Length: 458
Image (cartoon, rainbow, N blue to C red; front, side, top):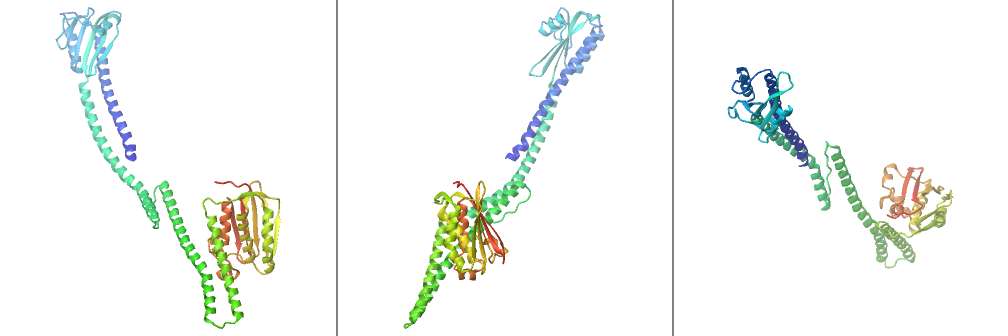
């Protein structure tokens, strides 16, 4: 409808303006013809002698010729307002005292009157040969009937053209709007499918940059929904697998003991140690899952307080130094300046602990881990660099995904759950911060954490 109105309103306005202008031009041309012919005849009559009852033939012919030319009525009046000649032979000998005639005879002023019915009357003075004294008046009356007929004919043709334009614009508007609305229909169908639980479809539409952007955004949304759905399914599958694996191991160990009635005490002790290790592993997975669930809350319960960040890192390193010493890993901390920031100590400690602990566990014998602290006027930065095994380039995009592990066999050897980096990233994001990673396989990995010095809640 908008397209139709946008096209048809200018057409109708222009056509109506043209019809009005055409009518005005025809009427004005008729008026100009009457005025010019009357003034020419009045000039000619100035040199003629005439009076009542002695109208020269040349004057009579001139009046009748003008009457025929203009298809109107010509009235000749003397200075006493008496009609000397009437081309219609109706008022000869009578007196005319209309304001226009009086103005002509007294003041030498021409007068023009028009009625709504299309009747035109023009009065002009007739001077004597000296062009000083008025000796009479010439009244020319006519109608614009012929002009109205012609104007109506033109209006009829314009009306036909308007009808054709309306039909063409309606057809073009329908086809154009149908093409414009088509992608919106596809987007609506996709949204309905997504709301019903089905996967959306990719939409391809070329032609208009705005609609292309909209369809691209919809395709991006569909892609993210698919990725989210796949991640959810994979997460559920991984959780089930990770929780089932320790239980399965414990059941195998317990069944092995049960089938042996006279199993030696050493075997019992060895199997119970293994069962305890599996219980610890199950407990770690559950605790990590609980931590991750807490991080996923839309409104996390953060206990924000001023913290000396170097003290927090020192406590983390103090707890992890025995693990580093066991693996012969050199653990170094460097603080460039004192840093005090607003943060949740528990969650920040959890995030940094996971990063530093991973740097120790996924390192090489005799390697090093370097932790540094720095700050500017807005953020503080914690960098954790190691000389470890590094991360393959094709796996770097997925390392923050839950349960994702680059080397599953090595992860199981050191007891990893695949949730550490996901927990660290979630905790840092809750602090309105960011985390970046750089790694070269076989050379080591560097994680850089940036967190605002002042916490701003949304």
